[in-house]
Amino acid sequence: MSTKPLVLGLSLVLALGVSLALASTTTNAPGSACVAVNGTLLTTGYGTVENDTATAVVALCPTDRIISPAVSTTLSATVWVVDESSTASVCCTVISAYPGGNAITSAPACTSLPGKSGNVSVLSVSQITDTKSFSSFFVSCTLPATEGNSASQILTYRTVQD
Image (cartoon, rainbow, N blue to C red; front, side, top):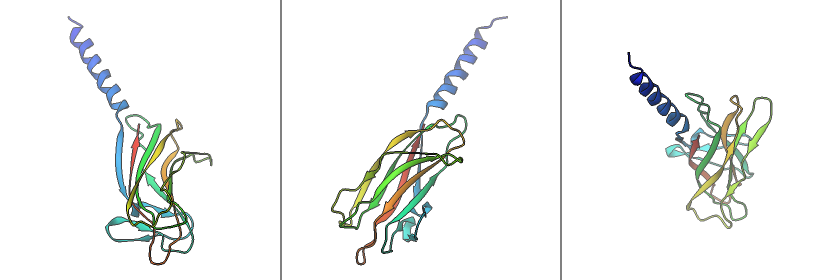
């Protein structure tokens, strides 16, 4: 009885398992998936959210953490926003929050001042690493206060996990 087919078969399974474990998972979510940590957010048409209040609002945007076939340990994000403030930037971070109260937070990615252009800005949020399998992953953005009839918005966000 030859063991060659068995060895080849196991090699193939191991190779596929390694490639599955190393593959990135990229997901998109609408801004309307975000919830206000302080204050309120207005959900607008097409799944965006905006801050239509006189104070800055922090939005917490969840992402499903990949746990199978392997636990993802890194998170980065791209966030599409509109900054309608002439005095403050829209800033976003990625966060891994452990149930015990600890959190790992990336450096902020912010729009440049002055805002109030009405144009879409794309913020690239740097990667964090967390090996604790019970942590939850989030994108967090601070939306400045409304100026006149113009409100800063989160249009959509994309996360990448490895």
